[in-house]
Image (tube, rainbow, N blue to C red; front, side, top):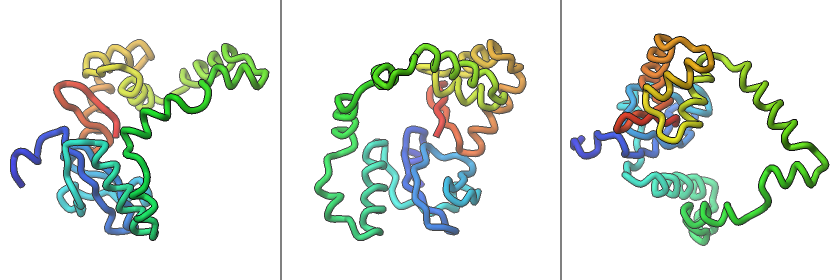
Length: 179
């Protein structure tokens, strides 16, 4: 494989040899686990249908493959692209606060209950939440967030390494992202 395809920032549509599920993997993790059946394999042994630098393109190709598998290829071809659908999504519906207020529920009370629930997370969940919630989560940012939530920095370092090795996260230019 060429060095150009080896770099992080590439997206591959891969398939599971056990259950035929298709999903998108970013970069080249050592292993990846099928989201459907849980089978873990070396990334090099996964069947890669396509590699691209554009995540939306990978999403569209995977969706097209799934639509074709189920006999809906022509209907899929008539849909707008993911980028266009994403833009329109923000315009559709109402926001959570308006929905809760309209339902007679106190949004602030619900938010506080969610905060209490988040505090009862495992240490790994705290680290995953840091990666999800921080704008540009570097290792130092994740350590600081985790430390603020009672997670030791040594555990954070080991967990970040394990997430990368398992293909559950990627790191590009020092910024972490969950897959």
